Length: 336
Ligand code: ADE
Ligand code: ZN
Figure 1 (cartoon, rainbow, N blue to C red):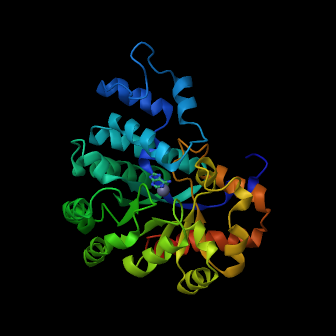
Figure 2: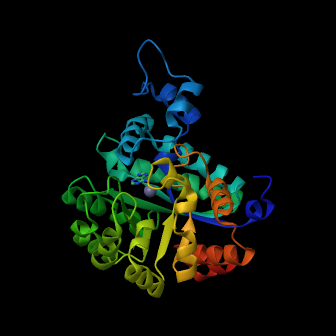
């Protein structure tokens, strides 16, 4: 990264980072000890070490599902508001080192409430870290509650209603849709997203990562989202590419994630050039930095090494990232 001083200093917005995916090996060990929760991936006679955990977290992962299974197992160490505070603060401080000026943090609410953690504990912990990042680092942030598409729609609706006061207070800015994609098309959640919009939530959905371009179209048409997480397989339809460009839809592309999970063989296979040429707006993101071999700057560098973009092209990406952020015009002007 020292070879890329321009990218290092570039002010960045990150829109697609799952806090649970920022549970690094040192955090896993610390929270496991603090809460007296054994790490599920370890055998009883061999407690995990920093090295063994780091190896377990390292890419590649054999599939999206294999990754999700490990990711869900590790989340059990998160119990209290202060655990979520530590997790979010550790990420935000690390992001600041990459010159991230604004971050939109995803949280899988249902994964935590399903194992007995109060929704408000998770949200309050993240809020504390966000306030500290704003005050001490000048990093603005938002919280996105993601519904897990492989859980029942009724469960998502119940979670949304429980989150309503947090949407009203601004502790939660919007909702998303994540987890195992194939076989769980976005349209099933149309009612949930319509109610979320009525509650004033911003909306986004994972699509075009683990399933094809038709899931991206479904998310745009039936969920009414102005943002798509991943979205890279939209490139398989010229008509959809033109439509995304015309609508100004922001795709939150995650290069190292896509390689780590085998969605593409290498970063150079991503439709970065295609999207730039077609005028599709996108940002670059880390998705689950503890699992995919890098934080935000690593993802920027991987794109640069694959595509050799010009300073002007980076300017286009940077402006789209700011414009597509869930902040007011004043904050956008500060970042431009
Ligand atoms: N949750 C965390 N990371 C994810 C990903 N890459 N795809 C779907 N759900 C996720
Ligand atoms: Zn994701």
